[in-house]
Image (cartoon, rainbow, N blue to C red; front, top):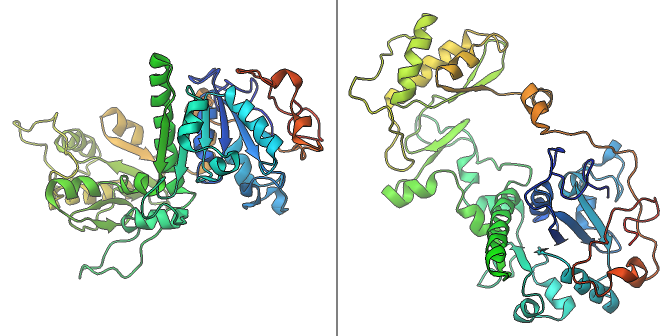
Length: 422
């Protein structure tokens, strides 16, 4: 695996400069559930060292593959979630390899563990003993259903978590006029559940690092994917807690208390789309002059003089109404009169409206704003290092790293024969 762009560790994704976690080392033992968390930490500048078994991490077998040729070194999924990381091969069924891992942990700041207890088992350490050995280490665990409890040993998947967490019930198409759904829910794709849990875990890790900076004490951070997803089903929790109101899934917009058929994204006459979100009193005040300029205001009127333009609707406090739906219908007619290229969305933004084009991936990658921020960067796929050929785990570590409590010896391979030459 290659190092991060240009400067490697401490260099943020996109080569934007040193990150806030520069100088920190992360030991990652993770599959598809937590590799995203490691990616976030690497993007913030941390040195992330991924521990892989001799046969390679399971995520190396996830499609798609480069040039559609299956190989442990050609998984685009693996490359995407493990860029800016380093990789070390250790057979943790071997006692000597476990000792090497313990020495590596002694020089680390964060352990990212998604093994669901398997790591503790192979090391022969319970949680209390492990924390006593590494009192300053931040240990971050991700599990499907928590460390303990009645579901602790249950298996999970991205689809299962999206269904159990409620998010899938918010994704799909409108009910018909009889308030019956003629289509099933639609699950979000691209590991949505793991991204939700990954961002929560990364946030918890940063909080633990702040605590350690002040006290010198490491902490345990544990995220259950089910709990993380259950707390993120759009607006459901707020509506239920405040008013015991269930929501309806709606096409291309937020789930709502009352079904309507006025999408908040609008299509142009050449088949492209714009987001036209926000229809409170302040939006109406800004909207009417813009539409009036083009003779498209229909029967819309500015809000009354006593309207509070600073107010915003807090999700859960009130339901939607037909007035807002009608405003969306008028905006739909306005957008349909334009081609994608000519639609005056920048003028709408200047007027204070939350309008923006829905772009295709390559259009974002070539946008001047993203290019200036260096959000996207080129990656070389020509050379992918081969597996470590050392005969024993002891051969994979330099004498200097043994016993060094804060060693920084691990570095990317520079030969084609291994991924680690320390």
